[in-house]
Image (cartoon, rainbow, N blue to C red; front, top):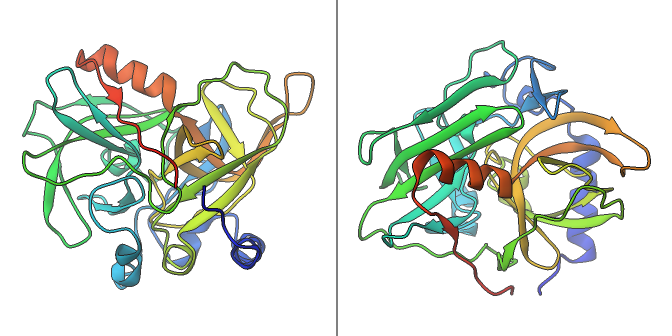
Amino acid sequence: MRRLSLLALALCASFAVLAPTHAGALLGSSSPPEGSWTLGGVSCDLIPTTVATAAPVGAAETCPGVRPGAMVTTFIGQCTLNFLFQDTAGNRYIGTAGHCAIEAPEVGAGDQGEHTWAPGSGPVANDADGNRIGTFVYAILQDPKDFSLIKLDAGVQSSPQMCHFGGPTGINSDNPGLDSPTTLEIFGQGVGVGTVLPARSMLALGMPDPDHVYAQGVVLPGDSGSGVISDDGRAIGVAVTTGVHTASFGSSGIDAGEVGITRLAPQLARANQVLGLGLTLITAPTL
């Protein structure tokens, strides 16, 4: 698999040092105040969807089309697509964050519930060029879940392969208690980082919780919804929050970091339960 160069890793580390805890402050976005949201019961911020007007220039070109890592725009703002799914009838769906489809208030506890829309009646999703790709059929923004699904219109070209890294080769649903450091990989459309270094590595000191992962890394406005994979290519989850996440240090494993990731397996299971579609992840080889 292609790996980030040492220079790229150094740049990423520099961004991590320079980026403030409240990522939305970079652009004066309308993201909720610090500490008004939670992931795994820990206070944090949603990764903002409001970006500077010029942000799509350059970033979109690094990952064109409809695929994991590509840009998506909604009535709420700019986000990043994660993984591609298929139902039993052969219809295709692609994911992003729930807060890219559910408008969140300025203040709240990170619980805006669960929404479904009949096919064709949900909010419209567009690609980086403003072309419609489909409509939302499902979204949840309820700690620890932050996930949504877009049903792709017939004829829209798509790829399951994550930009730069390839994969996902499957879903990582390891049991809680994994306390060894794990390298995670993300391709996002975050302003600044997304135009210079969209492909980034993060480090999870441990993954002891079945619903979330906290990682050391950097995310910025526009990265909302990005798919996160392990270095063996398996889908871990969706990047959704930023802040200082510290849940536990102990026998169950280390659970701390600046990036909050809501895990894919339980969210997909919940979407299947609600929608009854038999959704499965479409896999792809690593690069």
